[in-house]
Length: 112
Length: 118
Image (cartoon, rainbow over all chains, first blue to last red; front, top):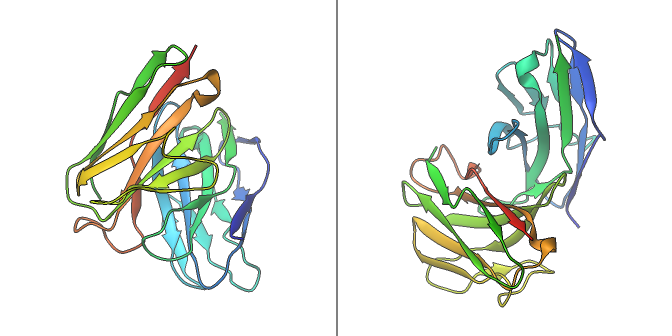
C-alpha cells in the first residue's frame, strides 16, 4: 500500500547549521508530495509541495525536490534558526481530492 | 487558502460521554477530512466527510463511534461517542478543493481540538 517513511527524530542542531530530514515514499502512480510543519502549540501548516517528478518546492528557506528515481522528497535548509524548532511531517496524496498519508513526523530542536 | 475554525479548541471529558467537534470554513470547499493525532504520533485519517451523503470511514473507524455530519460545503461535525481514555487525542479537520485554493493539491488544516478523556 501507500506509505511515507521519515527519518527518526529528534534532530538537534545549533543555529545556522544545515538541515536534512529524509523522507521516502511508496505509492502507485504519480503522487503529490508535501511537507507540513507543526510549531509548538499550533496547528498543522503547509510548508511546501511538489506535484510531479523533478519539481522543487520551496518556502521560508526550506527546499525539497521530488525524486521519482529514488522515491524521495528530502527536506533541506541551509541555515536553521531557533524559530524553526517544530515537528515536520512528510505526506503524500495519491490523487487530487484524496486524503493525505503522513509520515510519523520528525521533531527538530534548534539551539542558539 | 481558507480560514478554518474548530470548536471547541480543547475539552476535558468524562468516560462514557460524547463530544461533538465543529469545523467551519470561510469558503465553500469540495473536500473535508477528519484526522486524529494521538500524543506523540502522526496523523491518522478517520473519515472523509461527504456533502449530502454518509461519510467514508477508514479501516478501524466506524460510524457508531465517530458519527460525522456535513450539511453543506462550509461546515462539518465529528462526534466522539462513548469516550474512553484511549480517545484522548487531537482531532483535526482539513479542507481542500475550493475556489480560494491555488490548485487541486492544496489542503489546509484547522487548529485542532485537544480532547482529554478522564
